[in-house]
Length: 153
Image 1 (cartoon, one colour):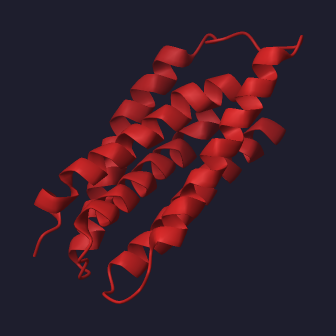
Image 2 (tube, rainbow, N blue to C red; image 1 turned 60 degrees about the vertical axis):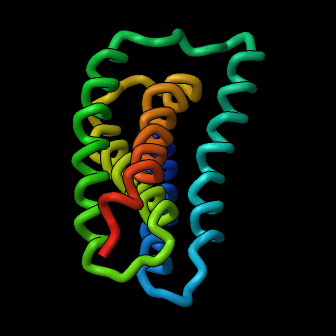
């Protein structure tokens, strides 16, 4: 249960921070940069935990037995979550389209991780960073790149 709580903590912090940033960015005159930075903190913490894990004697086997299934789930659910974030943002009035796209991508990746975490038995920090954190970052970058095209009004 503890690994699942850790995964959900990471995913919900990223998703919640992305949603707060998206809300702020969707209303002109509100600052969302602080929330975007807050969304990065759980990923930085996971990076530090992975570095500690790499230096320890009790490293969890990497990549583990279920990495293909996890990667497929994140590759499928992440873009769906990004699309949902983009649809939500289009109902608002963002003026900083790249940042709004980035926030939508964070939400998409966070939702994908939240949905799939209970079905993944792997629990090492390096696994979580590689197979959850990296897809979240990829979704965020995709949102940042596509934001100006998808979110203009």
